Length: 492
Image 1 (spheres, rainbow, N blue to C red):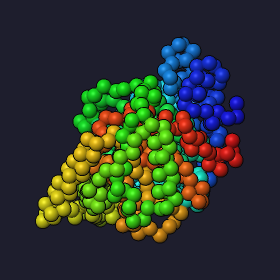
Image 2: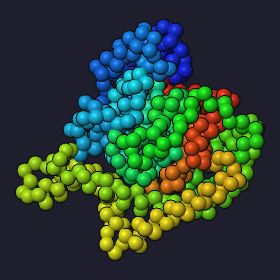
Image 3: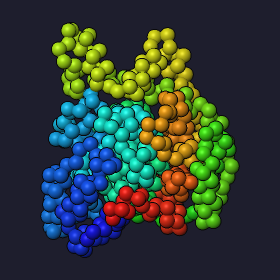
Image 4: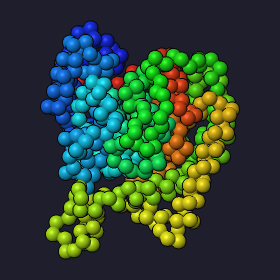
């Protein structure tokens, strides 16, 4: 079969179960596409050919023995921030270019248990710091919809592999929008779960109180299959919640759209820099949801102006603490011929970290320093609580909150965005991480340059199933999620 990459996860699962094709045939199909197409997209950092084929053969053996799960034998790509035993785990940084992980992240281990086949590790902004995937030590990943544009970040590689049909789905992490924004830029569906829903064990930390892993795929249904594997309590992660996991696939039609109250924040649609085409596509999608039975309710989110300054104090502060472990002594990049221990520290870090990472470390160290800790970091944490309360007050009136995922479509590679301008692009996503809420981005159309636009739906705590259900029903009535980028169509 030459069109295996066009199948949904459900169709792949059914095809494997009916012996229409084997996991090895499916895996070889994707590996051939990667070899042919990825030199243009540059989404993979490491392609694990031998590992993938061995796992595929093991999956086929399990299926013949009658021991297969719904996902046994289906390929997946992992963001290169998840530790994978025996495979390079770089976090997109020179600092970890030589790091071979001795263990698996819980998300990776759970995938193996479910029988997923690891195609490889995909590119990302260095240590997940960025919105374009250009800060990677391995160079910029290209957006399959327009190769001279970015795929978003930091999970840009995860978005690009799915958009180019180089993997059926992928794992990502979201600290301030890093699943949702690249999903929007690449015409995909991406879910950021409630903080604590998915284990962070084995994820290379950026900002520990904000980081959360989630699925990226073409549709809400495909995301639901991967969420069934990723979600759950993990004793190795002290922030993991011991809460029963729903069957996200079984619940795809469980939320009734009729009478569903969707909050429309006035402040979100009057943000300076909101592109007219993005606003129009989002409003059209809301009208479609209204036609399907939802009720649109105008709400206030009065803390909107505080999102960016609050996030860009807390996230760099946590990053400066988390990244202090990379000192050239224990593992990672080590400067050559250091004169003394101080020279070792200084040169290992200045040579091993890129410009964006160094910038955030400096901001965070300043915010945590004596004399500024109370004035900046502590105050930001207090504002964070006010942002959370603002959302909780809104959820007394509505079931979900709608917003654009990003104020624009994908930027051109090399666009001269200064750091502050880039940070302002996170206006719609970062508050969700500050509050620990779940949110999903789904494709809802294109701008005048045929670049994808995303709608974001924000839910109350533990409402992942509801968000997936709402988007799934929207996708049953529309076909934006089934559109293919030119590079995928040309190589169908």
